Image (tube, rainbow, N blue to C red; front, side):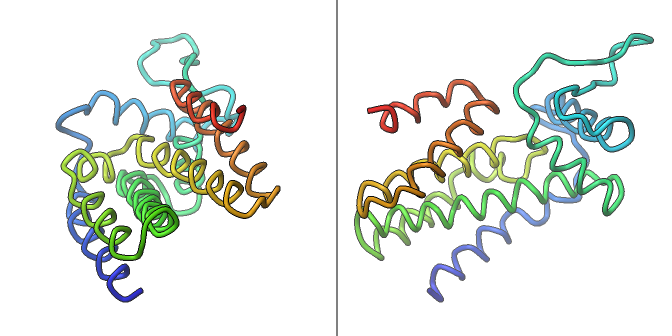
Length: 191
């Protein structure tokens, strides 16, 4: 357990310097759009079904896009702590660390403790993971929910826990609403 905590702390340390950086760099358009949706939720309407962007001119900036669970979560943080890009980046980091914990639990369930720790290590140092785990984008949240689908499904397959199957299905629905390509996660559940 101590080694797992050390790996998670090291993973967080690699990313903590990015939290206060402005939303600039690769994918800055996407990050700024996500931030504007979160800000509009917090300052205008908290109706999750009516996400708004800032580049619509005089017309309402309603956007037809995937389910905005990430932007909405950031908007809640904005209402509590005030508007700051660090909150969105920090939320991504929190979901990435929770995803790393799920990588460990899945690895331990299907292999052993050593393999699970190696999986967390490589998950934590993967370059794309380093970038997206502190980006103001929903990717870390999507990875977390996807891994939760797999973990809960494994729990159900191993011990027949009906609650795990239903929670796995619920997580699959949420992640598929956020990114419809994730519907493939439902194939084992359907089977």
